[in-house]
Image (cartoon, rainbow, N blue to C red; front, side, top):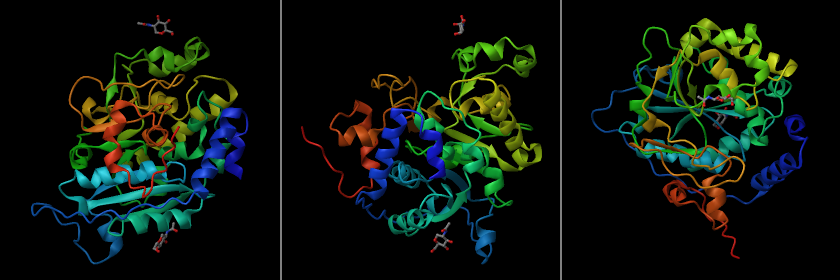
Length: 347
Ligand SMILES: *[C@@H]1O[C@H](CO)[C@@H](O)[C@H](O)[C@H]1NC(C)=O
Ligand SMILES: *[C@@H]1O[C@H](CO)[C@@H](O)[C@H](O)[C@H]1NC(C)=O
């Protein structure tokens, strides 16, 4: 129960734990997803008989996601959406990071049962060092140590995995992930993500941060813009070469001593990367569909085309659908739900 320490501070956190236990112990059965086949034009990733060599093929698209009991239903749907819209689904390799204290055996088994044809690995992540680093943010869910796993992908995955697409569990793709994975990173960028330069960047850090020149100078000679860490293309080779995990951890250590930001895992990424990332079209992260953080109001799509719908924010589509109080766009998530018997709560 080490992971629970971080949650123990508020009633909100307690409710989160109770619902996690409910989700874990509930009799949830996921349907088996169909097999998806490559189109004839797909490059082969089976250049060698060695399984390890296969998972290191340059032609594979590597996808990284976290896996836990609480968001499992979301992960299942996200995976289905990735496969369904891919023209080379057999070339996708999933890398799932789960908490070392979680029931990894069961998560692994559940995944294999629903996706018998999926190429995937589960990586147990020792989250206790992270739990000691995180300070309570405005939403308890953001304090889950597994949320910080995205900082450690370069260490967790085999060296030969050079590039990954990191995806949150509360999203669905409606376009081919290969297009996102092939985002050019240029000569220097370590990661690519949609940038939002109209967002007021000042608000992501505290007055303590901005009033301390030795800290705020971090952004000198950069034009920092907000980006969401729920959808990123990461060059793991460059990440390892620059030891970016340590750079992010250093900011987290500073945050423990003085409050320089309010949100959870996002601000350290902004501190290290904002202004130096490769851009991705906004269609690849239509974010905020979870609604308003405080009141849970429904949100509409941003203008423009859509390749990925992201229910970031407080509300999750499966929770609202189960409660018979869905937001209009939750209907776009429902077709990817693999839960066999969603329990409907009638009033
Ligand atoms: C998941 O299951 C597979 C197949 O049984 C096994 O080879 C693998 O080691 C398991 N992974 C974990 C992390 O338990
Ligand atoms: C951005 O936010 C800061 C702090 O909340 C505020 O002082 C500033 O006026 C805002 N800037 C713009 C351009 O809205």
